Length: 320
Image (cartoon, rainbow, N blue to C red):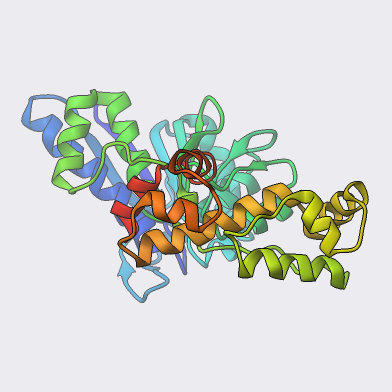
């Protein structure tokens, strides 16, 4: 039986959040039907069937929201800068709330996770969204555990949430794989010139995010020392000496002021320094590890895998 896929449109939607999954499902449908199977019927819907104006000026046609009592296979909730306004549209949210029980699965892409959250579909769940939008969503929906790293996550038995923008393509490929097997999903991925499963999480794409400066000047001075010389020896005792505090008192004050322990802060600064050097230089990983204070390439590799989800070599191949 042909699977019905509805993709919701609204003013200010991210175009690729719609077009990416649309192309994956329609591409899979062509491959499935060529083999004599049943594919997907994909439709963009909007309140009143109004044309959908995307955030980049592209306008997409849409049909009115269908009767929520009719069963569908997949509901896709895209994001974009208009997502916050869309979640305050009672007609749209009431429709999502009504149709979700009749869908086999509900998928959010990027900041479209707030539509699912507004409809109560993510209460008590772990969800992901665009790395830059995650802090906002965590504040707006404290009942949802927001994880900014995964490319996508199965938030519940029915609901999937994807990270920023192109992650909707990754998730759609995974759903096609669930429906029709790895071989067909791989065929679609190759046609799109994409990984079927990309390495790492979305943290590797995030811009460096520095913690707010400490209020106390001794702690700010320590932050500046760490950031100006990431490769120097920054033992807790030495940093405490610079701040003219005992080690125990320094650790407590630094953690309270900065939001993480001194050792974790040093590692994060060193990781960011290594990221920049992997992007901007041809130096070996061993040289970069020593220069940034990791001591060995293996220590740098472990930090990258833990913090970014990829090895230094994989990171360089992607971003250099």
